[in-house]
Length: 113
Length: 112
Image 1 (tube, rainbow over the protein chains, first blue to last red):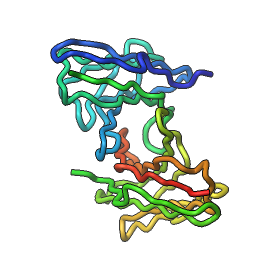
Image 2: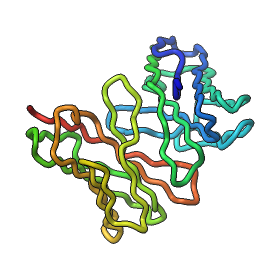
Image 3: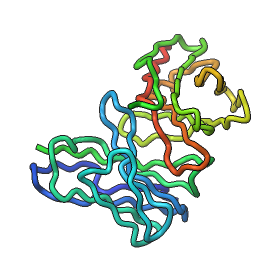
């Protein structure tokens, strides 16, 4: 099992460019999450999904969109990147919400110039 | 506003001694708590959890204590080993919700 994988691992964008981060999991988990980690801020939830075809906003959703067309994939999109979106992005998945731990991917380091 | 706080950004401990990492929360609806460990350039990995019906949970060298009245939890590592050097995040969730709220992390260094 690969667990949770993220593509790409690193990316540099210019302000205004767009990109999509891909998260894939092979554990048949229903729930998937996108977080960002910034110095001194911990991990903050951007968006999450409780099943194929569903998405919901987390703590910091502005400037991001997501899609969950297939159960195993969760895409995070930046339509017009801003320097404030420079961060490390983590995807996670879990069997359900509530009393279940999340399994994290290795992260994507994004720099917006 | 940060609902889960880890007020110590860093901690250094001698190998073999006890490491105590602390976490405070403000939301009384939180009833499930987890600790994650994170090495550089890797994603966080689950370490140990506790629900609000308990005040202690042990797993080998790791013990988590929960004080609901104080809205405080702590992670004890005994004995500490150099391989425990990592950033530790606590996280909390209400049982009715789908979100976890993370603290800012504590960087633990275990000195050989």
